[in-house]
Structures are given as C-alpha cells and as structure tokens.
Image 1: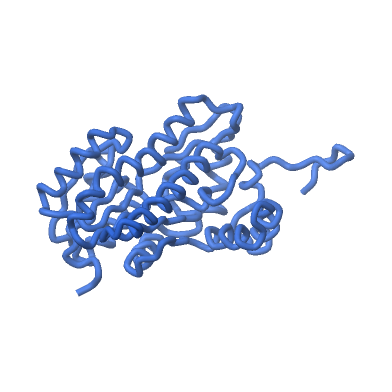
Image 2 (image 1 turned 135 degrees about the vertical axis):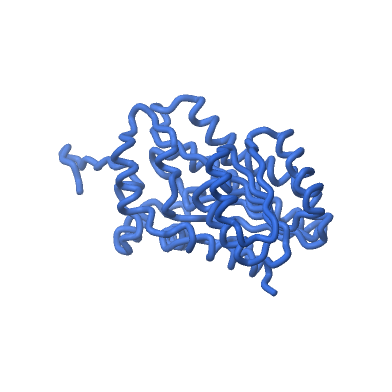
Length: 293
C-alpha cells in the first residue's frame, strides 16, 4: 500500500489547476477525498474525474468565510470519521501596479490567498492533531519568495503564507504535535489563474496572458501534482515545483537582498523565466534616455 492509500485528504481549490490535478492523482493512489471549491460546475467535473477514489465528498466553500471553513472541517470529519492530510490550494491572481490597482483588488487576493490558508489551517488543525498523524500543506508561490513588479498583491499574500506556514511548522514541533507542515512553492504551471485573474487599468491583460502561456507556464499541473505529493510523502518542509522556482530559490541563497540583480541574470541565462515578466514588461532607460534591451 502506498503512503496515501486509505488516507482522508481534504483539498481546497479542487475545481481546477493544481487542486484538480492533486485530487485526480490522490484518487488513483487510493485516498478518500473531501473536495471543496466555490465553483459548482468545476467541482463537479473534478468529482467525475476522481472515479478511482474509494469515496469522494464535495462541498461548495468560500475559503474567505471563516465560519464556513470551521463548519466544513467538522463536516469532513463527520462524513469520513477523520482527516489526515489537508492541502490548502485555493488562490487567485491580480496583475497591476500599486498605484493602478484598487484597494478591493488587493483585498481580494489577500483574503483568498492568505486568509484562505489561515482559515483552512485553523479549522482543520484540531482534527489533524486528533488523527495522530496529520499533515498540513499550504501553497505559496515562487512569487512568495521574491518581489515582482505588477504582482505586489500576489507577492505579499504568498509571502505571508510562507511566514504563516513556517511559524505553524515550528509550533507543531515545539509543542510535540503529530502534524507535519509543508509549504509548496510552484513556479510557472499551466493553469487558468491568469485567465481568471483581475487586472488593473495599467495592465495589458491579453499581453500578460499570452506571455504567461507562451513562456512562463511550462509545467503541466499533473507533473506539478506528482512533485508536490512526492515532497509531502517525504515530509519535506518546503517543496519547490519547477525549474523557475528552483532558480528563484538559488538566487536568494546566493545573493540575499541583492537577489533582484542576480535573478535577472540567472533567469535570462537559464531561459526559464523572461526578464520582461519580472519587470512588468517595461524597458529601462539609460542615462541618455534611450531604452535598454
């Protein structure tokens, strides 16, 4: 029997992208699944694709609703008797400059991407502890490791996830709780996050989506799921997903606060992440007022 066989696994954001790929992979490995999303049609399709699972429960849940998440965690345990693995995957994207973005755009990203993880963790943690062998997995991003122009809200929320997950891991160790904690940092994965994201008035939505699909989203969600589940099975504290995520992590280790200069050079050499994406597509002007690049 494999590591996930017979385990009860809850996944938020299971309606599409990495969440759906994780659900399908776990179904094939014999996990009982508790799947949630706020999109009914997408969630139903994921349910259909998880026919190999011993049992699947689906619930329409908004991770920004604290009480709904508390109730949902209790529902999962009432339905399946326990929950041993929780994957907090739900996330949204906003693209645009700080000055060009509305407060509501930033609040939405922080509510879903950060508070969604907090609500999921606090709702499920008592049940994970009660299982005697729990595992909480929060999804940050390569953008949670760096600051990227035109992605300030997303970077801030995902960096907050990193801090929260790291602190939670230390708490579980310090208090001798039977819960492992993993933070996942995906790079460019072929999902619909850019298509479904919001855009500020100074962001060229078609150009951003085209560039993302053409040069950034190199990894298939199925392969991303394989790498994530392998890392979780090995009980790793951090799981970097994709060459671009590894490149970002390497640049940070090598350069520290000077990572931005090193990162631009490293990613240009490895061709895993176009520099124009990191700089918002804008070219710098030299002292003579002529555009570089």
